[in-house]
Image (cartoon, rainbow, N blue to C red; front, top):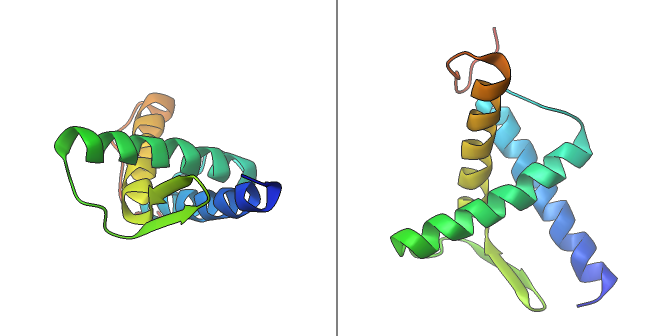
Length: 98
């Protein structure tokens, strides 16, 4: 795996994290945090699909690394919901901007 493949995967993970931040309406930081949330969300999505034996919906892969976009966004949403509950000590509101 070369550096270009890693950068492309990080950009895709950042987009998945940004989509999850938009859906949950909670942003713990800047674009670097979006990338981290996207990477961790992709891993959580992979764990969910392997444990529940769910099929991949939109797989994306470069080189040896492959992950599913839909499950990465869902894993990022779950991670952000958990972070918002732990940080704000309140119930999360999805799509709420008030």
